[in-house]
Length: 169
Figure (cartoon, rainbow, N blue to C red):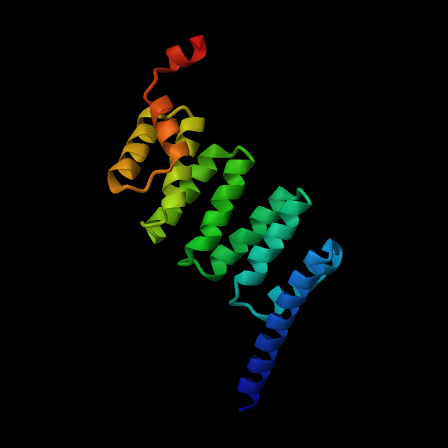
């Protein structure tokens, strides 16, 4: 009985510090928000929300390696949750680590094949790597499934161009 009470207390405190982190971040106190986030992460070894919030705070401070590490810990805690995978892939794409982003987007799609944003972003990562045929196939699949947006249609048109014609334009 005492173990359950202790566990309940730890989970409650983790939720409290997660809410505190959000409040402090909204108030502009990034240092206080990071400390609250660290406390929440320590108190609940299963929760990924605090790690995702911590990653966001680190990105705001342009600490991209630390942000990615927070997401990797979240993935270790809950490997079947596609959201930390997606957040990591988006971070990798934004920091121009296209090979890693491609791999992470593929992980997202393995976990959640209906994650349309991951499909679109995967195609973008493929384009950035110069893998135009693979990107075109990804965009064609999205178009076929009716899950492509205007940007994707534009990129699809560009992915059909030969690399030589792109460099002459």
